[in-house]
Amino acid sequence: MKICSIIIAFILTSCGVKTELNDKDLKWLVYEPKDTLVFQTEHGDLDTTIIIDKKIFYPGYNPVEIHDKYLPEIGQIWYYNKNTPYINDAKELVYLEKNKPDHRAEGFISYLNETFFFDSDNFDKTDTTISIDSKTYSDLIEITSSHRISLECNTIERIWWSVSEGIVKYETCEGIFWTKK
Image 1 (tube, rainbow, N blue to C red):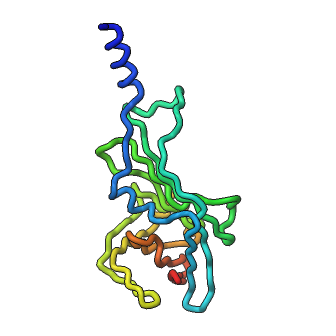
Image 2: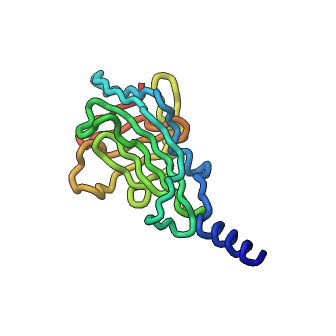
Image 3: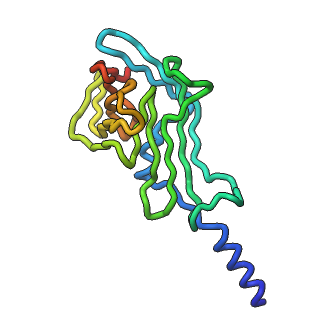
């Protein structure tokens, strides 16, 4: 009986405890497959992005990989945009990984050629409201790139992210504003 208890205790402690993305983390996973995002400049140029896939999962068991004592949960959203270079079937828009239950998820938002990292870029809740086609967005987070990957600005300088609807506006390095239609 004592050996059985030791074996059960060993199995339970060696498998790790699963973490879960909480509501604060999940606010970044607002899109669903087949959502279509259409952006337009003030000059009438259009750009379309299609959400391809969304996954929230625990990675498969790998005896070589060590996850500390917690099994991380991962959330991903994939998209397609014909104007994005180096894209095959899809490109990752949002990647979240929560490694410990009492910590915030880490990851990034990557759109077109710019990546915004949760741990080093500027994610500022703003009191600004944006009105687009008679719809007002007041739940905005302004995301500004720190150019962690490259000192050059490749495409996007800033994103306005609605907690309820995702990207509603972005500005390129050339000062061109794209708004959601």
